[in-house]
Length: 340
Image 1 (spheres, rainbow, N blue to C red):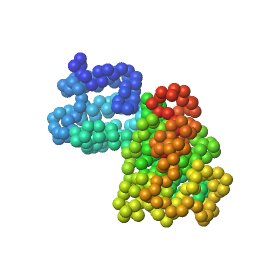
Image 2: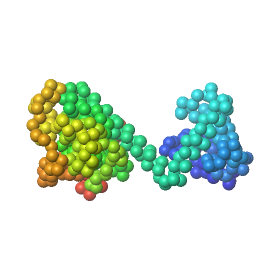
Image 3: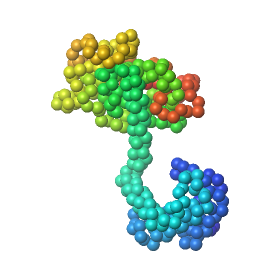
Image 4: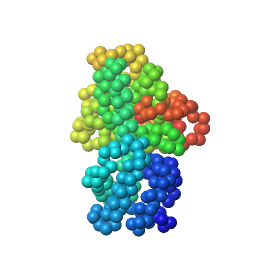
């Protein structure tokens, strides 16, 4: 038992397994060590590149399932809602083990061999996409409940109109990603929308969303198709082939006011009947950047909304223990709040 490395640092109580915590008594740890020593296994670890029926992999499976069954029968896994009727169903347990170890984990190892860190990157992308979906759902619910104009609802309902926020553990906030295809008029509109949501109390219990000093471009580069022309960054749109420009943007319509900072002011608080009103502004020329993309003195660039707006919180995440605290250190890695 002295040579067994698996769970060598394990102590009675909480044991960190991956990102989770496992609760085991000291007697259970001794039992696992004794069983592994009996099979001559110093460090448990299947070879996912070999056959699942190889001698080594069979020994790993046998030790894992037998120790699991014995410990589960004692009630050690009751906190995980383990169903005791399956403790003796060896066929099912073997199938579950083989699927997880020799299919899921094997694919993960293959991906890591091709590109180191690929799995971690994919997991981060999934979390960010979930954050993006939550942000869209919250904004869309507010838009429907308040009967916003349909031209706004169309933009809000599209998943790719919203930022895929990424959590920053060091600063305990969510980094707002920059969408290169989204215009400043649209950025300002979303800021105004979030201000309305905050005023209504929807965003009162939310995690902080902050914009990093160095803009972080979104990992999702696919731009939405068929949205009003002024949704798109004219410089970005001008880089596309003419045929692609026509497919991407709806050049027959615009969504935002000539001055998007006035969104939701006065008549903008009314319902969808404003859709039929004509929005002044004329033709948008892609060769001439819009004033919202060139007037740097009044509006900062995409992804650089530092110290412009009040601290903003995102209602799409679970509340933190402490919320609403203002940032005091100007040298923090992340400052200000955006609307990306």
